Length: 176
Image (cartoon, rainbow, N blue to C red; front, side, top):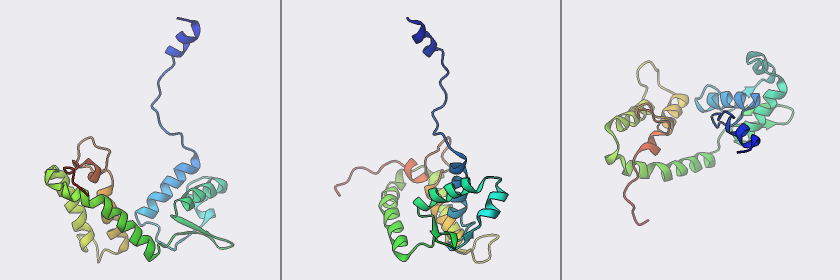
């Protein structure tokens, strides 16, 4: 063994995580606010207020805005600022078409799913279906959050970091 090989063998093996910049971390925070309905469609985002609130430079914030604009969560209007995107009816149709493609096979496999997962998804459906406890009529934000919850990490699956839908067993192969 050479000295070089010995040196390489002694190097620590860090967890393989994607390096993130400050702009990516700010984008992650704003993305969560948009998805959870804390920032409603059409809301103007003030660079000045956000940079002061989160103690980041305006350049960092602009980069976060660019990242989220590429994802179509934000939209930049020249000389007016950055706004939370308002999805069109076509965007909503596309979204539900994609969800249908993913969720129908999951529903077909629900008979094989653990009871805890089925209850967790059922609870999310109930939450999105009506006003629920502590809410006065719900509103789009509450329904949207409940609507997307089955696609998020599911606490009912012990140790699982995958979504509820993906953690269900695949249905038996069918001829489609």
